[in-house]
Amino acid sequence: MKLTLSARPPFSFPSVVKSHGWVQLVPFAFDEASATLTYVDHLSSGRIIEYRIIGSPTGVTVQTSAKLTRSEQDEVAAKVIWMFGLEMDFSEFYALARQEPKLAKAEKNAQGRVLRSPTLFEDVIKTILTTNTLWGATKRMTANLVMQFGDPLADDSSRRAFPTPESLAVTTEERLRAETRLGYRAPYILALARAVASGDLDLEVLKAADIPTLELRKRLLKIKGVGNYAAANLLMILGHYDFLPVDSWALKIVSHEWYGGEPIGPAEVEAAFEKWGQRKGLAYWFWDWSYFEKG
Image (tube, rainbow, N blue to C red; front, top):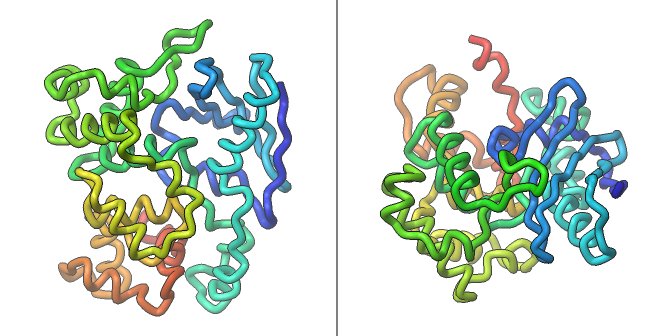
C-alpha cells in the first residue's frame, strides 16, 4: 500500500523528524542513508504493521507491505497527518520570527512542527519517561515497555508496536518496577493505562478539542506523573505554545544566552521568552542554540 499526503506549506520532512528526540524512541526508527522513518503501529483492527515514511517538499509518502482495507488506509492516513502536523499553519509565527535574528531561518527551514506519536497515550507515557532521568534511561525504559508489552510484527518479532492501554492495564506495578525498570514512574504508567483502558479517561479527544490552553493544562496536570515540565511538553505536542518545558537543559542554555552563565530558575526562562506570548514555546524550541551546542 502507498499513500501520498500533502502538507500545508512550507514543509520540511527532516525538520519534523529531527524536531526532538522522539525519533530515537521505539517503535520509531530512522535510516539516515535512505532518509526513511519507520514506525510499527497497532491498528484498531488488531493488525500490526510497519509504516515506511519518506518526505518530499509537498508532504510525505507512506508505504507498507501489508494490504489494507479502506478503513485501515483511512486510519493510517489520519495518524500520519497527526504525527507530522501536516495541516498546521505557522504563518503568524513566521511573521514574528522574521524580526528576530535567532529565528531568521525558521520559515526557510519550515520549522514549527514537532514529531508526534499516533496517540496521545503514547506521548504522555514517553513524556513521563523523560522526567528526572538521563536520555539514555528514557530510551531504555521505552524499549523495555515496547518489548515486554507491545505486539510484534508477524514477520519480525524484534519489531513491536507501542503497548495498548489494555496490554499495560493487566500488568502489575511490581513487574513495571522490577522487569521494565520504570522506577517511581511505574504506578503512574499503570494508573494511566488502567484509566484509559476502562474508559474513565479519554486522552485522544484532547487532540481535536477546542479547549483553552489553561484548561487543557489543568487536565494534563491531573494525570499522575505529569508536572509542569511534562505538561508544557505535552502542550507543545498538542499545538499550544503558551508554556515552556523548563528542564535542566533549558536552565543551562537560557542562562548562557541572557544571564552570563549565572544560576537561574524557571522564572528567568519564562521571562526571556515572555514577549512571544502564545508562541513562546515555538520561539524557545526553534531558537538558534547551535553555537552553544558546538561550544
